[in-house]
Structure formats: C-alpha cells, structure tokens
Amino acid sequence: MALMLFGFLALYTWNARTGYLDSLAEESGLELTGYLLRPGAWAADTVRGIWNHYFALVDVAEENAYLRQELRQAEEYLATAREEQAELIRLRALFGVSAPEGWVRMGSRVLAGRFGPNAAIESILIDRGYASGAPPGAPVLTHKGLAGKVYRASSHSATVQLLTDTSYRVAVLTQTGRVPGVLSGSGPRALLELRYVPRNVPLTAGEILVTSGMDGGHPKGIPVAVIVAVSQENEGLFQSVQAEPLTSLEELEEVAVLTPSPVRYATQPLTPFPAPAESPLPSADEKPAPENAPYADGNVAALAGAPTGQAGRTASAQNRTLPLSPR
Amino acid sequence: MAPFLNLLWWFGYLIVGLWLQLKLPGLDALLPGFLVALQEKRWQQTTWFLLVCLLIQEGTGTLSFGSSVLWYGGVILLFHIGVWFFVTNSLFFIVLLSGGIGVLYAVLQYALGSLQNMTLPLERIIEQAFAQAMLIPPLWGIAYLTRKKAIRHAESTV
Image (tube, rainbow over all chains, first blue to last red; front, side, top):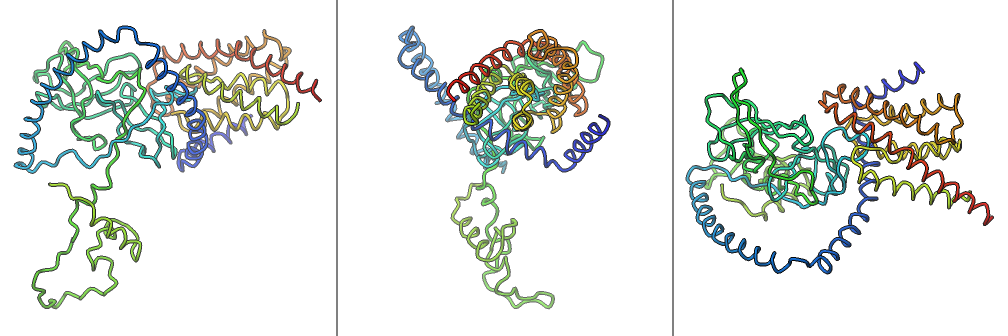
C-alpha cells in the first residue's frame, strides 16, 4: 500500500514537472471523447433543426412583426454606428493607436458542459483544438461578449475555462468612465466581482465592462459584463462592485475562439535593414554580407525564426504577398 | 461470450456513458460499467476498460494528471474491502459501495482542488458527491442486467 502511494506520488511529481502524462491524456482521452461526441452533437442539431423549421411554427407571425420592428431599430443604430466608425478610424490614424486587429475569429461548437468527475473548474468542451485554432490561453467569446479562455487543448478538442470560475481573472475598463479594475469569477450561479477600484471613483450600476488588454491574454475592447451593484460599505481601500456576465454561460451552444493572426507578423517592415538608394562604400568596421546570408534578401521569415535556406525563402516570398494593414 | 459481442457491448456502454456524462455535468457515468467489470473478474478486460476510463477522464478533466488514478484506485480499494463482507452481485452491496464512493468523490475533489490552489465551492462538491452516489445503483443495475442478457444470448447462439 505504502509502495503504491509512493509510486503515485512519484508519478504525480514527475508529471507536474514534465507534463508528459497530461499531454498523453489530452491527445488520447480528450481527442477520443471529442470524436465520440461529435456525431451525437450533429444528430441532435439535425433533429432540433427539423423540429424548429417544420414543426415549431407557433407564434411565427407575432415573432415576425417583432423582428421587423427590431430590424428597423437596428438599421437606425447601424447608420449612427457607421458615422462613429468613420470618426474612430480618423481618430486612430490621428493618434497612431493600433486597432485591436491581428486576431482571427473561428467558430466552434460546444460539445459538453463540465465533463466527468475531474472537471473541477467551471468549464465547457469545444470541438476545436490547438491544431484547429484553439491553443491554450486563447480567448473564447459569443456575440454578446467574453465567455472564457482555452484551458487545455488536444489537437481537435479543447476545454474552456469559463468567466465564472473562481480562478479566472481579466483586466477590464468601464466603457464610459474608463475606470480600470480586475474582474474575477466567484463560482457557479454567482455574480462576478470587480476588484481594485478605489473608493473615490464614481461607478454606476448598468455600466458595461470591457477588456482593457492589459493582462496580455485578451484583446482590448471585448464586452465582458455589466455592473449590477456598487457598495462602499466595507472598510477597505476599494469599492465592492458586482457584475453580471453579458454572455449567458449556462446556455452556450456555439462560441468563437480568438487567435493571433499570422498576418500580424506580416505587418512588420519587410526590409528590416533597408539598403540606401545610393549604396556608399562600406565603412572600416562594416563587412559585406555574404550571398547566402539569411537576411541578405530582406528575409523576414528568417528573422522570425523560420528555417533558412529554400524553405525560409518560400516563407519570405509568401509574407511579401500578404496585405499590410495601416498602422 | 464471443469476443466481438463483448467488445460491442463495452463500446456501446462507453458511448452511453459519455452521453450521460454530457447530460450530468461533473459526474462519472463510466464507473458503474467499471464495477461490472470488477465483478466479472476478467482482469484483462478490466484493465483495458480502466485504461480507457482513465484516459478519458484525465483528458477531459481540468485537474492535473493523477486525479483519476486516485479516483479509480480508491474505487478498487473500496470494492475489495467490500468483497470481504458482502456478495458482490447484490444490490445492497452496490448501494453501500455507492455511499463510500460518494464520500471518496468529495474527499478527492476537495483535496486535489486544494493541492492545485483551486477554490472549489464546498456546497457543490457535496451536491455532486451525493449525485454521484445516487447515480451508481440504477446505472449499475441496467449495465448488470443488459450484460447478463448479452452473455445469455451469446451462450444460446453458440
């Protein structure tokens, strides 16, 4: 018994240091589960689709009228938003603020909620993995706002840690007042908590919290939650602020995963060492570059760690054809 | 029992178990099948099924590797302690064992969560432990009866 316990502890410690067994379990168990659940999810979607399109047509006329009204309102809002967008582009160009671009959004289906006895944290299982655009740490959102981030991933499936988990933290700003704070989860069916907001800063219920981008893991400007209660009754330095997630985390069916775009790297200057128009003679401490030097032809891929030689040149040629975004 | 039919039964159980886990967040629906495997005392079959269960639960879980090893190891230990006192195929034994497994669930979740600096709500751990204990007897009953029927069918066709 003692030997078995010792063996387990040795295995646990070895895995904590190397992560080999975690990777093995992800690549086999998580991947297998994803493959076994996908046909069922497809069948359930098909049955639901048939039911919704052909059988559940009660109150459709009423809903249609309501949607038309919503559409009119949305068109009005869109016209205003277009004006604001144009202004935003001008202001960004004026102040040189880089847009939160360079991220790719990829849709993903939710396969399961907290799955199995080891799903200790608030989590969901999705049908994308690191090979299909969902590496660990990638933010996950819905059309309403942030839902969480990828916690661990196999090649084609991943576990997503939800915003409500007690160990989830995200740096946020209030949308109108631009007050910074850290939003943390408080567990299932509980409100989120906005921390480190000084007592003298005015906050109001109903204000939207968006990601500030300061934590490095989330791009700036994603809506996260709405403030529902502000209290200064505690004796600490900070206010007690509670917020509710904008996304309904218990009813997730599809989500979007954000990953850094490869185009981002193409926005770097293509010629890191531009040659002057009239090439002067090399100075005394300057040596001419050999013909096969990796950067001699402005090979940016080589700078970024891509293999040199023919493969590196191919990557370089591909980079040149990528569109450059305005900075 | 013919190997093909045997394999088919276990694969079917695996699919049903996974779908149940989908509908019952945080619970282990593969465990009753594992109890059936333990009762049959066919060690090769038990080992394979245990390996599949371990990989699935470890891979899809959010605790680091080792939690399922302790979980299934604890179940094996409880089962063998129970064998000294009870007839393993009786429902009474399974109900008692389920109670023990429920307690094991709560202890392991709390201990392993603490070990990884996770603040897990105690209320939910207790709720889930209770649900896990309640889930085992009916699921074991269904698995045991269908397995018995499949074996009988296989024997009658030989």
